[in-house]
Length: 334
Image (cartoon, rainbow, N blue to C red; front, side, top):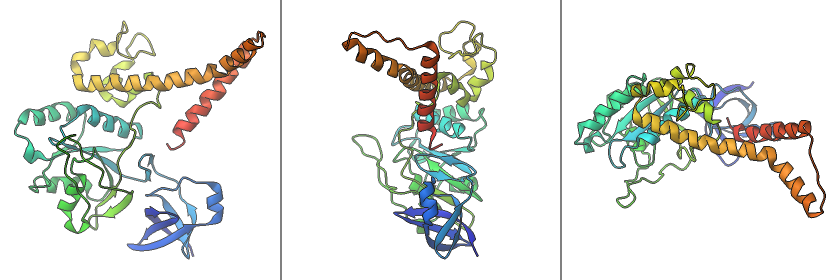
């Protein structure tokens, strides 16, 4: 009789499934291989005699790292070493918002900060947005109880730049986890990845985290520019009052966001503009793909001294088809 469990690690062709706190090493049935399903850490599966029979529907899913069925994303930043980057923090927050996953904020290495202004700024910006915020020091064991409270009873993905102390925080909760850690380079002021694969780890009987290699290539070049404001609650609440429906809240006249710009933190607004510029890359890709066939056809026949004109109906059809193709390619992992 088939049993139900959750994949907590994938290595080569082997899938390690947790069922009632027991580990089962499984492989895929050939019929599932032929279906080319996207099977990732966190997936719930039905298995029997070491073979996965069925992959159950995902509650949620995030790509890069590939993980499914998580309860929350905990964004870990360092107060110092490396220096706190508000743009990077806003990038992670927007990423979690896009995938509609609850988010908590943790600021580690609090023992290295002698300036309370950074802490005050963090609360000033993010507390009104509804985020729970904890400050910790993995080295001094400060704030660890607050951090444990955030993780208790959930499967959490720890998200943050290399060297901010994600592994150190987990080791502070349970030294038996013995996750690899590495210090920040003095030359680059950056950390290096110490996690090489994606795996769900039981920290305690009631806490599980997804140890990941990191969130790679996190750019918003898969959205249209006028979709980015939905990732910022303090901006999107004004968009319905803008004069133009496609307003990008930059220099447009009649922009309700600009009229209320004093109510929006400058670093958050600057991050928004950065993400809009990244989204413009996607818009250009779609625009280019819609005219690429026309250009190639024109140049090909121009060399033969032939003038070819594509009808408006066929031209629009080609644009729509290629836009859908690119959109599918970019979102295939979503």
